[in-house]
Image (cartoon, rainbow, N blue to C red; front, side, top):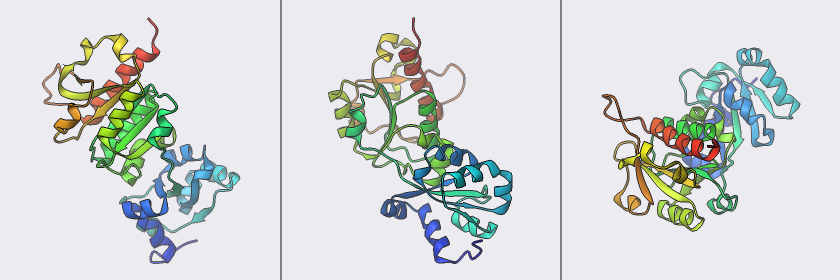
Length: 266
């Protein structure tokens, strides 16, 4: 059992809570049973699995599955796991995984029908929840712009509850270049913007087209130059007294509007 919180091995894992270390190593941290369950469907992505005795007993099925897949399983003390994780109350399971993002050009070659582009999204919870919603809606990919939160930030990864393993992710994208490539590939670009046309008024035939939904910053929305590039701004109407919708909620509604149009026959 690994018991020294100050060991080089523990410090090396803990460094992966920082973006620079993730970028340098090509690795990221995955905490908790739900994420691990999804990762075990692709066990070659898992470099090491660290687990406390209590968690090993509680999730014996996952540990057995990991060992059967020849994943390196290392028992650690509670104190060690707390140093490795960025949470106050770790869940007892922490995997070090290879990053799995794809290039934009490779994604476009697959002819995606529904994509979410996070344009300067900074909140990890929002970003992870959008990725999870995109997965649920059957989207083909989620793209993180260069100024968005890191897709492998531990809070983002936890918020996806394993969805990060289900659909392609592009990171570090230039917004203008990405929109231009969408259009060249025949993908319409819609911005989820409060100043746009009301979503219920958008015709189903339009929503059924290959679509990239661009989602702006939580606090200040879009850069003006981004809105100049999109095909149309679309707003989710508010019928009650709420001042606004949470970004992830609005994104879910927009993605599902396209998913319904693309998947439900008349």
